[in-house]
Image 1 (tube, chains in turn red, cyan):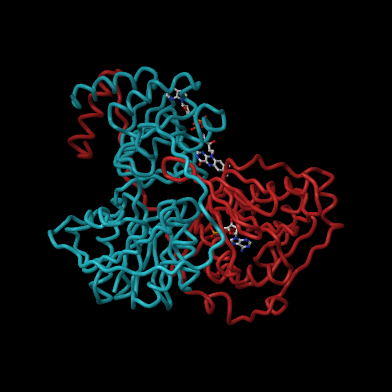
Image 2 (tube, rainbow over the protein chains, first blue to last red; image 1 turned 45 degrees about the vertical axis):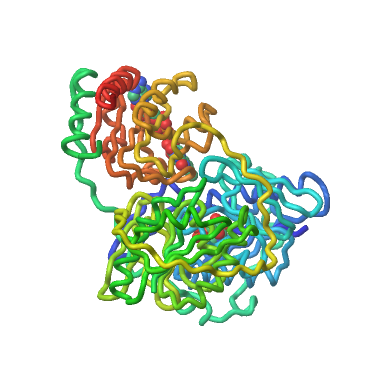
Length: 260
Length: 321
Ligand SMILES: Cc1cc2nc3c(=O)[nH]c(=O)nc-3n(C[C@H](O)[C@H](O)[C@H](O)COP(=O)(O)OP(=O)(O)OC[C@H]3O[C@@H](n4cnc5c(N)ncnc54)[C@H](O)[C@@H]3O)c2cc1C
Ligand SMILES: Nc1ncnc2c1ncn2[C@@H]1O[C@H](COP(=O)(O)O)[C@@H](O)[C@H]1O
């Protein structure tokens, strides 16, 4: 099986994000593999290690810079990496991003697709599901248990008040949630091996798309501006002995905040 | 026209319908047209009657035994022709686990844009702007639709729910021709906890590493039970194995916005704040006055949670009784 893992380049979750003139300022920010995508890579590697003829591919859509992140994802043990490199990537909405990824997937071929439940920059949680629709595949999102037997995928996902068990044939798209597995760290051996493994950089043209398909032109939505979070009025610290603080808190909740 | 996708579970239409309605009213006023809603599932008559009284012109039912246990793929399949053919300019749904999943598939089918997990509806003249958190709440995006159907999911508990005004929506049925979908629900495993679900709770009592061990949840459980609250947790305690992941609040857990969020022994890491900072009132109980949670808190108590929480529970009991 060709197992393709979609991997997005995102700012480190600890990064300080600042907004300047309505835009996100990314200077000094470290870029990493989107944390949820690591669960997908881990699951793909587990399938491969369980035996059989399998290859694990990394697919990233981003600017040239994203090559590094694609390689860090490969360093977990993937066989091949693909980057669709285009300057328009940051301006693509979820629809356009999915369109690019679907086109690239058609180009490289796939038997199974893993991705993250959401990217920790746009927090949009759409791309994987959209890719499934564009490729006419089944999907299960926010999955925390995965099993593959006889060409059938059986997964579990958290729903309100319980778990849902879903089954579907491969190929399909699984969007991964924490709890699915414990992603490994890159080993020195695998880090060294990346440079020897095939790494392909596609242009839009290579996957049959043009500049009109992507960026602001190809998107249904656009971010007109970013804003920093509203500064909250500083809270009030209630001091005193436990009995007094408890009483004062309840009074505040009733009379000031009026929530009880 | 504006369409609201109504969510239901265990025979109850969710409150998110009323929340979507308040935003739908604004959209209908500016964009023109009626407000409609759609319910999808099987044996929907009882559920439909729960919508009587809301200011919705027409309620469409996609009712089929085929949809009893349907994946969102199948539900989107059922909805897409209707949404496409219905002259709907805008479609609103809940940013719940179900709503996010369904709308992503539906938006891809239309195809159209989708603004996920919005916390505010703004206007730029007569152009709606959907305001939503990004980078785990470290920034907010103003999302505008350039063309096509406007589709958005709204974060539960954030928009004021619209009140019932006494009208009864007209009812219509939409026939569903089962297409061929790949995914199929085999089973739904419910855990009977007796407690409210986190994402729906009005009050949440959450514990962090300050709880010191799994054996100490009792003090938080008692406060939660006194208040009819849900039980939340930080990632640190989930990773330590003191509580299940389904209780985790934050970037890699659930996003919640209750009326009151009690953060007990939680330091207030950015990833935790990402999941709860839209709560109306945040109460922090922490013995370290420097803990970052106090910056996010509406009310803070600097003290030992093992002393403060039980007293708080007793005080609440006297007013609840
Ligand atoms: C990619 C990524 C995703 C993450 N996602 C999440 C997420 O979804 N949710 C999440 O919560 N975290 C998440 N984290 C982890 C987060 O960074 C913090 O490590 C975590 O939230 C800390 O949990 P805590 O506040 O319980 O523990 P700590 O930071 O150890 O804080 C414990 C607090 O308890 C206080 N305390 C100790 N004893 C007492 C006492 N007797 N009485 C009162 N207070 C006491 C201490 O003063 C301290 O402030 C994520 C991290 C990463 C890198
Ligand atoms: N530019 C991209 N390149 C590769 N994968 C992506 C890209 N954008 C999104 N994805 C995948 O889709 C998932 C969901 O992203 P999002 O819908 O943006 O929250 C991510 O976790 C990735 O697996």
